[in-house]
Image 1: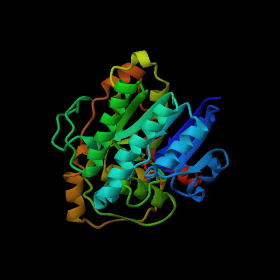
Image 2: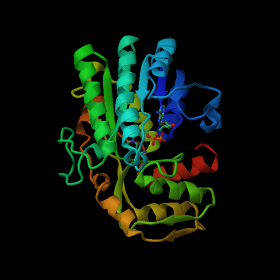
Image 3: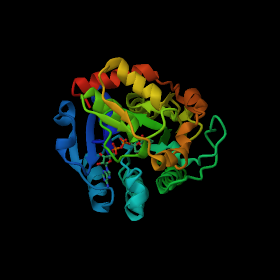
Length: 319
Ligand SMILES: NC(=O)c1ccc[n+]([C@@H]2O[C@H](COP(=O)([O-])OP(=O)(O)OC[C@H]3O[C@@H](n4cnc5c(N)ncnc54)[C@H](O)[C@@H]3O)[C@@H](O)[C@H]2O)c1
């Protein structure tokens, strides 16, 4: 039986990935600082939760040495705005944490390390679409830590043959998003809260248009990249693209399924400014040609399908 370890597996992407790996019969270990109570009920008893912190060498080494996963999906991270409020923690978790995972993988012979980076590694003034190898000059410390991790992983690949590979996600739409986990979190929260019958206040312009990948596509991309033949890969880091949606289109998508949703608009110029500047990158289309060519990547969910599936899962308690 193949085995996978997911760092940050309690989070939004990690839990979806865990479901997919379990469905194909893998053993799944989740390494996270979050308690087991945060794991969705449908996977809680089917995975092993290793309570370990990326900031702790001994805990990471012990977790990898004693579980010997074939693949590590390294997706734990501190995200904005928290990453921008605490620089030291950001660096310790996002950069040094990646170093610890790579060292453990090297020392204990882990077959593959798959990394989740972000399109926030690019600046906000960008060509359309953004080429895979476009220079990375991030607007936020978060992006800087992700560029460092990408380069660290590539270094381990060149120097030690560690089979590092990764993707850069746009904003991820899906259930389980925690308030405060990214300035773009409102795009998911408006859907989740309305599906639960709760009111939601939107603070940005209805015309603000962002690009998204649905969380199930995000998880699937990590699994597909892990499975890709080494000889087919022409780079270690891959841009991914997805679909586009304005705030109005997201709200209309919600109203199509929840006609009595209580959504109010309270425009906040400061919030909008962040979305236009530091978050401007997620208004751009990514060139994902290499992912398509090298490992046959394609998304499964359109905007409408993603919103419908999202609401269905929330109603069934599968967040
Ligand atoms: N959510 C998005 O819109 C988005 C967009 C682009 C890229 N990404 C990247 O995708 C990955 C997954 O994102 P997500 O939305 O699932 O994040 P999330 O915040 O939902 O989950 C992150 C998980 O990491 C865990 N974690 C945090 N610090 C830790 C530490 N010190 N040690 C161990 N575990 C720790 C958290 O407890 C949490 O369960 C991240 O690497 C993120 O940078 C996310």
